[in-house]
Amino acid sequence: MPVPIIKQKCCICGPVRNCGPFLKRVLENIEKIGELFEDYVIIISYDRSNDNSLDILNAYQKINPRLKIFINTGKTSPYRTHNIANARNKCLDLIRRDYVAYPFFIMMDFDDVNAKNISVDKLVKYFERDDWDALSFNTSPSYYDIWALSIYPYCYSYNHFKDNVQYYSIIQTYISRQLSCMPKTQLLRCISAFNGFSIYRTNPFLKCKYDGRVRTDLATREMIQAHMRATKSKLMYIDYGNVDGRYEDCEHRPFHMEAIKRFDARIMISKDVIFY
Image (cartoon, rainbow, N blue to C red; front, top):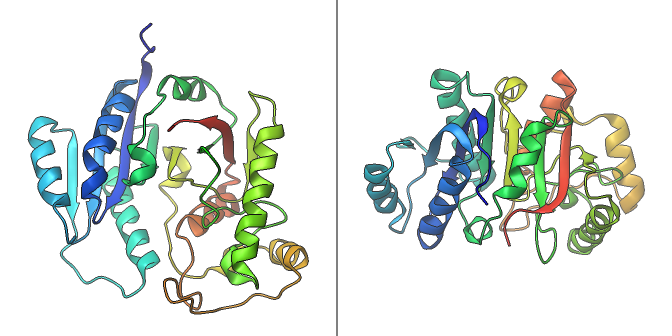
């Protein structure tokens, strides 16, 4: 049975760096998503890679001219989250310039998570609902993106409190239980969530920015205090080696927190698994 077409337009966006092994499958999935819409465009922000990612993108662009590639030739930051934030913001810049009339955009990662099989039919119903502004999804076998997640009482980043490895597992169990206990049609409201793939209503998010820095100014005192109580810890700024907590945080958290602060955006999670 054919999936009904959403009579809207959508931008499908994301950063690419060293994604060569997954690009073919992710682009195939993007085509399936694009077929749901009246029209779509693919916007990729590419950072210099050590693999054949750019060759794959250039070859694909000849087949599907809907693909628009921004190639970053400027300086990159020593901090990974800053670079990813910059790449996602470049996608938003192109939407602001050429596609501001498109009512939806999707921000996604071009990695193994989104190279799995996709259930596009599960997406359609959400574009007919008006109870979300940003919507991400569950993953199988478990919810994995605790880095981007902020949900009461774990209102900030697990990396900025003691026993971060332990609390990764605690928060993962917490969110998985919350989602499993929800009725099928219910959405779970949170402060921030991504999980590799999220759909957005273009307005108001184009008035916000991704930021890979530590932005406690966007969190209320109540949020920080709730997380401190839950973890029995004060805020901590630690260089973990792969992530420098003195200067880095997940870029999605400031993006979502700014949208909540300025526009009371509804950041929601569905229990549906889109990629399996």
